Image (cartoon, rainbow, N blue to C red; front, side):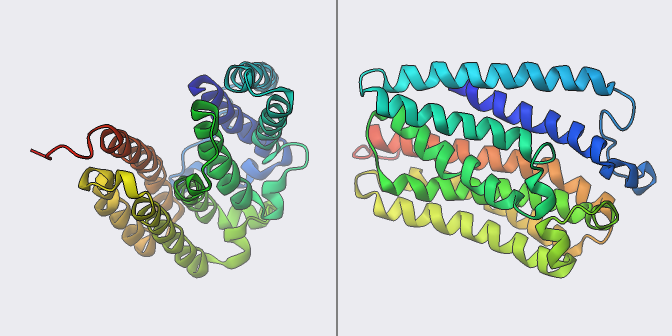
Length: 271
């Protein structure tokens, strides 16, 4: 399952690099802005090499999807297997299609796809495959992860507002403008914490203080939001990308660890 998720992420990153190069979006970005250069546009990787890498990762993603779907649903019957195969195929298409093919990222739909596939589809779907049960409450932590993933994307798109406008790439941030995109960034982070907090309180049997380990990331993400409001240049936005992505991973890990501990030792003293 980890390999499946990793293949989607890697495929998305490489396909986006290749797609932006082919559409000419990267031609409008300059290293003088202090923004990290893309692999194909900078000449670090040749277009043909990146194309082969995208093709290999597409095959790997579909292969891991098939294995994960079979492993998680083999005792439930073919309708469940077919459903997860279809979801995996859609996830693979979405990973490729942000800037390639349909290029939905150029139509302002990137945030919607990121929230859906990084969020409820990935989290609630993984929960079902591992437990063989459906719990609608899992949509809430799924939304939290999806919102934070969208916050990373929004930072990327705020950084590129001017160059995306020149390239005809109509992201949500470009359509809203920088002030509204900063407000949207704040809302995404607030919604992420709100959804998970509601989930914790609704999970009656796992409500111990350790379930709130994810709150340790609040100062970090809060500082990121503050710096986003202060940021004025693409380089300043670019500097916030990696920390926000790492904080999103930390949020998910701490939430999972806290819930795992509480599910097994909720009745035991904390110390």
